Image (cartoon, rainbow, N blue to C red; front, side, top):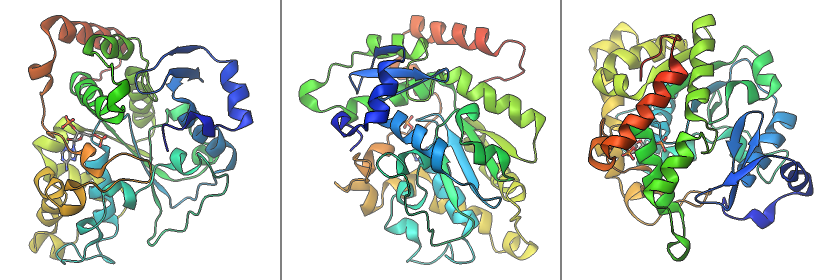
Length: 320
Ligand code: A3P
């Protein structure tokens, strides 16, 4: 349903008529709201959840910019937090027949066509995902004690992943996403919840100010030392691994269950099953590697992204 622009509410139509817009690549246009870019439907979800969502102190948020590894960390966080209710080593673990996006919903997408969505979860605490910029998060999130985990990824790999994904999302007959067009838009910051750099930087800065509340993770580091970062995550979320769990290899079990190889080869993620959001489950699994940009970007493109990154991150101590 993400493509149904005609499903916009009057409130959203009025809002977008006053906002700066840019050509979009899956949608006709993107709109700039509170400094970040959105498709119309996404914006509708954002303004509704800003108005109606009530956070609980126990809530946990996974925040990413699209294509940073959300699917992977959704699987990990769900498995980690629910490991007592859903033993990791059983055949009927929910990940065996659910795409991770069906286990951890996107907050703002739940509000697209419903001011009062059913947020009763089968487990506690509630885990939400979001792509929203820090300062656009609903006020109740800022006022509560809930924890936020932010995952980011190298911008060149994020861009390549986004471009490939956007292509899959666009109906074939209207597909015209040439790499050059999508690239220019990305560098200008025009992609859902972008500019990429601003989204990442706000969470980075906030995580420095309040490391009890925001854990900042990088996809590349998670790939490099998954065990270390899974333990950090468990500590941060208040569910550290016990000596018993360490001994029986719980850390490795979780990582194995959530690995690219395992998830992407499950029937549920291989066939034609689709998410409620409309995309096929398999669209979320492409290569899952670090540095694939080297195969797809020209030297000039890589240089251009590096320049923007250097300029935007200069002085903040963040290397991606
Ligand atoms: P690539 O397109 O580079 O392969 P998101 O989940 O935020 O939409 O990001 C999708 C990216 O994460 C894709 O990257 C996808 O292949 C990768 N991915 C999905 N599941 C993964 C996993 N279990 N481990 C590592 N990467 C994964």
